[in-house]
Length: 116
Image 1: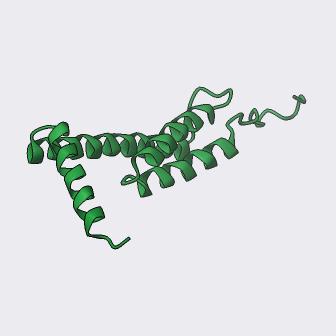
Image 2: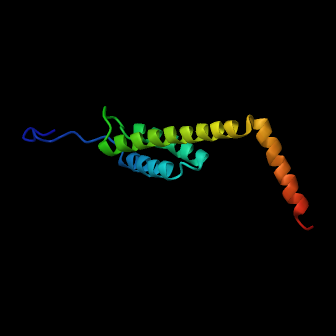
Image 3: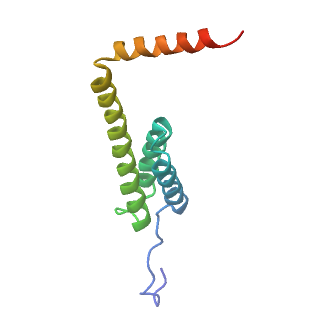
């Protein structure tokens, strides 16, 4: 630092590419909530990138905070969708084994009706 330069700020050590990656992954995670594995994977990666975007700073940028919030929301919604699907399956059929039996009967019925 020079003697006459009292107003200079230290360089921001936050990573803009990591923030951008977190934003992109948060958008993918939200838009693919119905694809459980893709949404969960992108949400977890988005959280990691948002946290890594701090660099050497103690705080995150507003964009990284938003991406972190959206990724957490996408993961929560994905888990709720998966839990709701299993709850509906159990309520409809009584158990997973009963669902599997009904499913196999349907497969056999459709394959028997197909011309070979």
